[in-house]
Image (cartoon, rainbow, N blue to C red; front, side, top):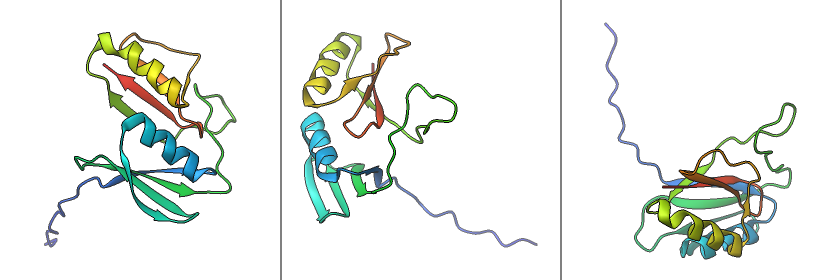
Length: 131
């Protein structure tokens, strides 16, 4: 008879993004989200978080980081994860996109729905605003 293992209670703590420019990327997300820096290991790792708590975004220095190509292309670096941010409704999507661009994001040239917008952060990580 197989022994049953207790299932651990797991909670997502953070999303970690690799980058060659840790400070630049963390400052982009601080501007975009209004979050604050809560941890820094100089030149290696940093963390930002909402004042309300919840999942954090961490930034890890990676000299070999290669930005993904989006949309995907054969033989090119593929995205491995992306974040979706709710914008509170279709009527707020355009304003959110303009704000993100003013913070340093780039609107992806290919868009396939009026229900979300695909953008790239300054390190090339794709993220979406969703209604």
